[in-house]
Length: 457
Image (cartoon, rainbow, N blue to C red; front, side, top):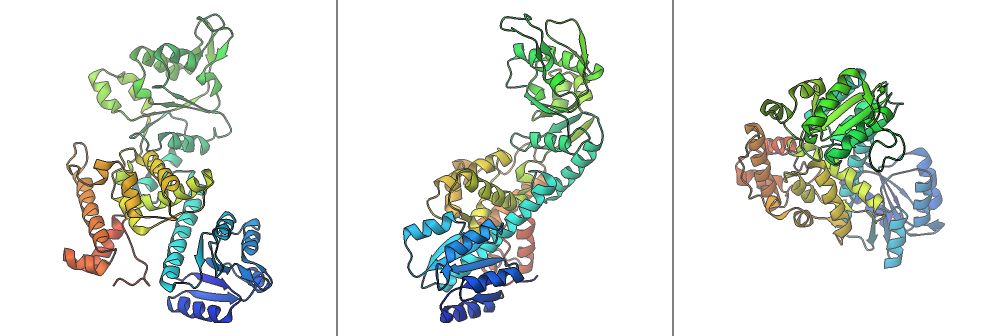
């Protein structure tokens, strides 16, 4: 694989020569520039993967050069460096878009680590942007997510009702929005109702609307969700929590595609596609009589299962990179980076709250971590205590054997890699595994994969 192309801008020829030699030995392709004007000319000829700017330049200011790049829409990672570092200068550079600020004289090992981390995170965020543009916000390239996205695309082509099944926080509403946006109804409305959040005495009015005077407080006519969604999609979240009497009325509307407002005696035709979602076992509930079997059959025309995050751990690094960047922007904070062992710690956690919990953990880390680099100990402190310690029972009812084995292997390898500081050779010796087999196993489990040029000793 081609190595990254870097640009170093500094007014000291000795530093340019030293950095160009050191970075070239690491396998990078390196251009140098002695000032702003030369750097701007080089930008016209090539797109760089990462830049290092000195602050004080003979014909300008490195921070101003960075601002020009950002104003032109360039998202290349930039590391600032200066021999006259101050807190104010570091803040100024960071607010202008610098990923990191380094003080001269530079420590070569620290610089190489910073560059490697910046490039890795930039690649992850670039991949996340590409996936967002083609998949909305349902990020991932694991087999289960690739399969789900294909099912969403196929389901969107038809008009049949859909039942989305998944644990809390897996993204069921997101799936329903993707179905709507990829369907012929995309120009129509998208209405949603959480059946568990509306009191049972009000849910009929919410769904079907009411006439003026239908009940105390009904001062005027009001259209319900079905009418407002006509021509588009109605998302019924947590449909399994709907009371049985209301289930009968919903079934009739789904069959007839017409509603009667509360307090009215006229029917209104509606053209609605229903996407329902639940985290309950509706088939089991129907068998026990806790949910109408005929309504379950009517909703379950196209079933879509959203996998829990623990069954697609290889997607966690990509999701974490996207959520980290989003949280930094949303909270208007300086950029942060995540150490590889921190990502490993995330991958080893079960996330019972799924992607929603991962989002909350990342935001907690962005806000509360006092340093620029989020470390493994920061992640462990941010995760719920008992689950993050790895002392939960491996066996859990309802979880397939292959998933339990994968979790056990991931926990063992993650702890071993942390113990040996990420050194694959030492880890393979301790576990008496061929190093090539360890690499393959770590990659398959979504754990650390070193670059081809990274030393292991």
